[in-house]
Each structure stands twice: as C-alpha cells, then as structure tokens.
Length: 66
Image (cartoon, rainbow, N blue to C red):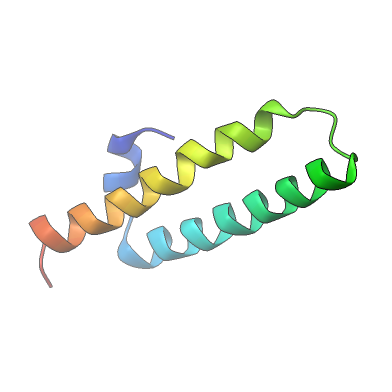
C-alpha cells in the first residue's frame, strides 16, 4: 500500500484497515513464535504497512480537519 492510496481512504476505512493490519501482525507473530509460519518475510512487511496507515490517519486529521 502506498501513501497516496492511504490518503484517498476515508477515516472509517483507515480505522478499519489499521485494525485489520494489527490483527494480521498479531497472527503472524504468533505463528512465527510457534514455528507455524513458512513465509517469515510477511512479518516484516506488516511492520511497515501499519505505521503507514497510522501516518495517513494523522495526516488527514492535520490537513483535513472535520
């Protein structure tokens, strides 16, 4: 996901996306800890996407106040 895509989402979509990403991160970390994950690079990929969505939410609050 790119920052332009994040900025195009509504606040509700951003909140939902952030929740989904955090759930996915948790599940991937749990799988890695128990040795069930085969594609370990997915854990690191999620660590970059969730902060991106969070920054998009903060940008929207600063630039486009309701």
